[in-house]
Image 1 (cartoon, rainbow, N blue to C red):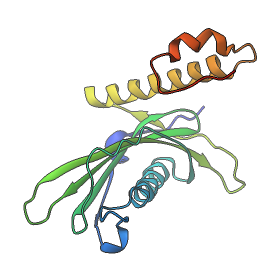
Image 2: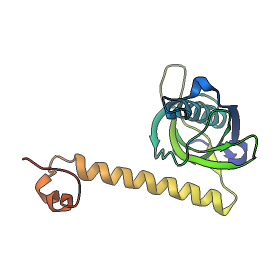
Image 3: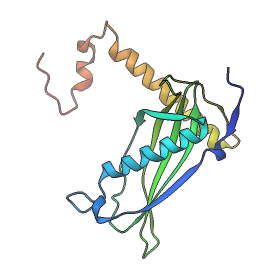
Image 4: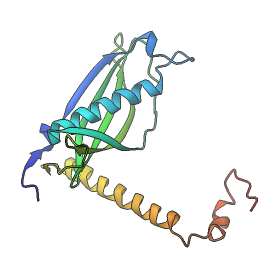
Length: 181
């Protein structure tokens, strides 16, 4: 078992980047894929900083684009480790945009990247534990635990060999779906 622990504040990283016309999509707003790329970069850096090794993205949970980002705005991504397992870490990321002229800041999205530490042979390796020392850090850790539990329960329910769609057909009546079984 790994006996080393690191404080959450030692995992925090922030990056800022000016949004250029080359980052825009066809409607003139900053392309969501570009923001996802920046988020993946900071998740990698944050997880690698905590683990001291190369990390890969295992999953991305909940990316809701709340506000569009304009060309010319300054985008800031803030990250920290919210949870650690044996070889995995959940990196919480908050994305904000700032209009440089007015100073107005918008929360654009928050997301959770699960990263896995790897050794030179590409095998998963143990990561340091996490020291949490505020109510917010405890809450973030517990929320990650609950998300992991809910994901596992959902997978167990719908991926089991005895899954019966007929048991769920009534649940779908109020949705925009036509069932032809």
